[in-house]
Length: 351
Image (cartoon, rainbow, N blue to C red):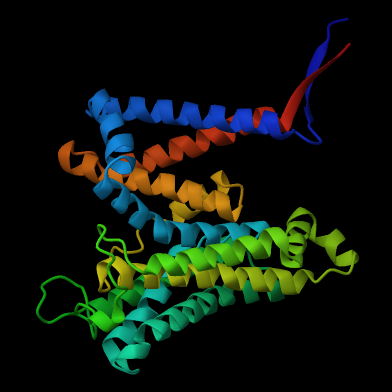
């Protein structure tokens, strides 16, 4: 009788097997991405120059990479904390837009004294992001509405609100483009004299450390992991399922709103139509590659910041499209997803 083979899910893949599959998938993804870029007209030697030397080994390149990584860390954390309780936040860009709009309202409205503008922008952007995600959260909690649909649709609504303001009340009359007036210096993070790096990095560090401690060393992290693994069992054990989900989902929206404020007050110094573009996909990639771990988010966001920095150079000098840069991100993610199969399942035979 011939043997038949079937797949068996591993109970515990183990650190070394998981790491080997992860590194293998990352290597495969980077190799395929390199081939795609070379096929698009980028010389092979330029890949090393742009993705390694000019992004990490020069002062200007490292400054650009670090600056690009700051909002990526926040949106990566936003996706990660929601992912821990199995809430699929596909409206990260919408919450980012709301945070940016809230900060812009403070910056342009003159509603608070100059000395309090940055604190007010920080506070209101966090509140705006949390309120924007509270709607799909409430719909899911009360009526079981799928959050993928509601968060995605609200993201589009947020973008339309931005368009309405940029083509209307907030449009800079001295500019032919739909942008606001430049923020005053009291509404900007102070420059550090190293590229575009600004004091907003202190906010990112504090937020990251607090979330790392909360998720890895407090009861909140234990509750989140329990809810993410099996919410029904966790509820039966008497743990605060609803409170944990609500708290982390609102935190997810708040972090995205904070990312919007960081962009307009840190680098753009005004609101425009493009500040939120691409952050949703990047946030999901970062959270997944980091396994929803806060410190992993920092590392992956920094690497993705390097891709963005190098991608901007490739777009200028080699006419590489934005779609190609997104394709590189997707290729790496899909390669890792495919190789995770080997750590999740084993092949068994029976006669």
